[in-house]
Length: 104
Image (tube, helix red, strand yellow):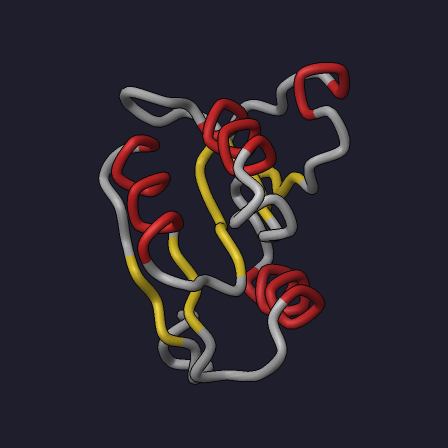
């Protein structure tokens, strides 16, 4: 869906792989599931915030089960199943223009 909208999408099968990608490649947004192997989505967001090079990288979490707001600590959240148009609006709010790099 994001590629069809013109975004360049990189994927990672685990939170640790996503973290490695974000450290090596300049990304515009991380759109990640809350439940991931190795590092969950919140742990990934925390690790990105601790690194000066990725501190300002926007992260949006998504999941079928909504974590409590204290666990989200201000990170935007999309509940599954989600409206695809809403996802595109959220991405557009954080990303300058299509052809930008988004990892999910």
